[in-house]
Each structure stands twice: as structure tokens, then as C-alpha cells.
Image 1 (cartoon, rainbow, N blue to C red):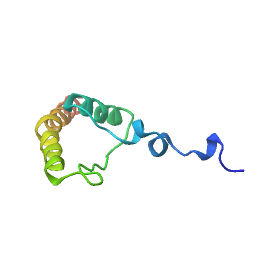
Image 2 (image 1 turned 90 degrees about the vertical axis):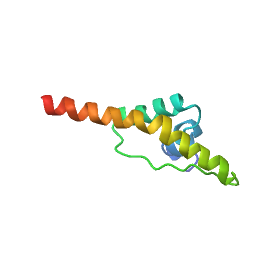
Image 3 (image 1 turned 90 degrees about the horizontal axis):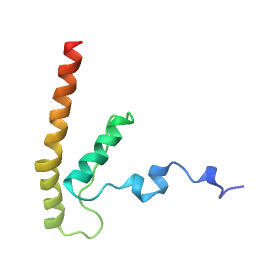
Image 4 (image 1 turned 30 degrees about the vertical axis):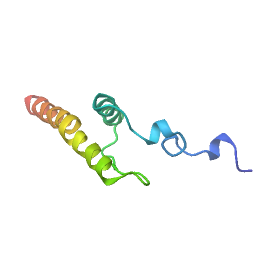
Length: 86
């Protein structure tokens, strides 16, 4: 019989809070960092949803590249340096 909790699928597919990341650059950075901490090796991102105007999507992408991505570049470098020191 279908419809029970076992049929719901993983939270990433059934719970919006597990499938979507939105908010301030700090909130997005923390959410992406958490994904890395649990061992996910990569994520697929979309910056335009539905009928969102191009200008808003472009601003979201720019904000991500200016405020969020540099934080992960720094973490990647620190991790590489730590491994090299071992």
C-alpha cells in the first residue's frame, strides 16, 4: 500500500526547507556549509525560478558570487593547507 511515511521519499524531495536555500548571504553560506559538512560533494543551483524577472535572478547570482562564493574559496584553501600540513 502506498502513501505511508516510507513512501514519502527523502526530505530533500519532500520538505521545501531541505530542498531550497534562500535568504541572506550569511544564511545561504551557512546552509551550503552544512551540506558540505554532511558529506555532499556538490550541489546544483538555480538562481531563477518560475516567472522571476531576469534582473532579480541576475542580482541573486551576483550577490552569491560576491558574498557567498568567496567564503567557500577560502575554506577550500584552508582545507588544502591543513591536508598538506599532515
